[in-house]
Amino acid sequence: MFSLLVNTPANATWKQNGVTIAGGNGEGDATNQLYRPYGLFVDDDQTVVIADAENHRIVQWKNGDTTNGQVVAGGKGAGNGLHQLNQPTDVLIDKETDSLIICDFVNQRVVRWSRRSGTTQGEILIDNIKCNGVAMDEQRYLYVSDVGKHEVRRYQLGEKNGTLVAGGNDKGDGLNQLNFPTYLFVDRQQNVYVSDNENHRVMKWVEGSKEGIVVAGGQGQGSALTQLYYPRGIFVDTLGTLYVADTLNHRVMHWTQGDKKQGTVIVGGNGEGKGANQFNGPVGLSFDRQGNLYVVDFNNNRVQRFSIE
Image (cartoon, rainbow, N blue to C red; front, side, top):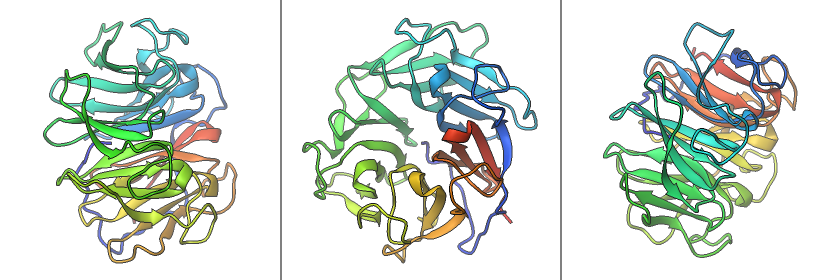
C-alpha cells in the first residue's frame, strides 16, 4: 500500500453500515462481479483498483459507477503468459509511470501493466518471489512481501535482488522473524508495517533495524481486543493510528500510537455474515483522502465503503 496522506481525526468514527461499491452479485466473472477479491488501491479520485484473485484479473471501478468494473490487467484465464495473471493478491498505482504494479501470486512474480488504453500485456519486474503484498514509498522504492522466505524486501524499480528490510531469518515468531507476511504499509519515514499473518500480529520495522516491534496483536489467535486472527490488510494514517483487517474475526480494528496493548473495533465485529454491518473474511483495506474506509470482503465477493462520520 502507498502512504497516501490521510488525516483522520483522533476521535473519528465511521458509519457502521457499509455501502457496496464493487461486486456483491455473487461469485463470477461478469463485469459486475468479483470472485475472491484480495488487495485494493484507492486513487485520488476515489477510483478503486482491485486484485480480483480467482478471476485472475485486476478490475477498476470508477467512483459513482457501482454497477460495472473494467478489466485493466489479465482477465485472460489463469496462466503465466505476459497477457495473463494467476491469482493476483495485491495491486498499487505508480503515478509516475501511470502503471499498475501487481503481485502475481501463483506465477511467483511482480508485474507492471501500463494503464494506457490498449495495453494487452504486462512486463515482469521481479520473478521467483512468492509475493503477497506490494507497497511503494514516496521515493518510489517498491516493497514486496515474500511468503516463501518470510521476509520483506525493498527494490529500486528495475532492480532484481532488493534489500532485506524485515524478517529473513526463517519462519518463526521471534522479533527478527515473520510467519507468512502478507500486506504491507510504508510510512513517510520508511518504517515498514507488516501484517504477520500466521503470528496473528502486525509488526513495525524501523528503517535499518534488525528486529521489528509488535504494534498490534501478538497474543496468539483469538477475538479479544488484544488479539488478531489471521490479519491481512493494514493502513497507517498521519497520526500513526494503525488500521487492521482482522480477517477471521470479521472486523476492522484500529490501534492508536499510545495504546499498543489493545485495539478498538471500528466496523464489523458482528459475526460472519452478509449484512451491511458484517463481513465474511475482510482482507484488503484502504482509505480515500476524505477518510472514508474501503474494505475487501473476500467471501462475500464485494468491496464495502464505510463513510467517515
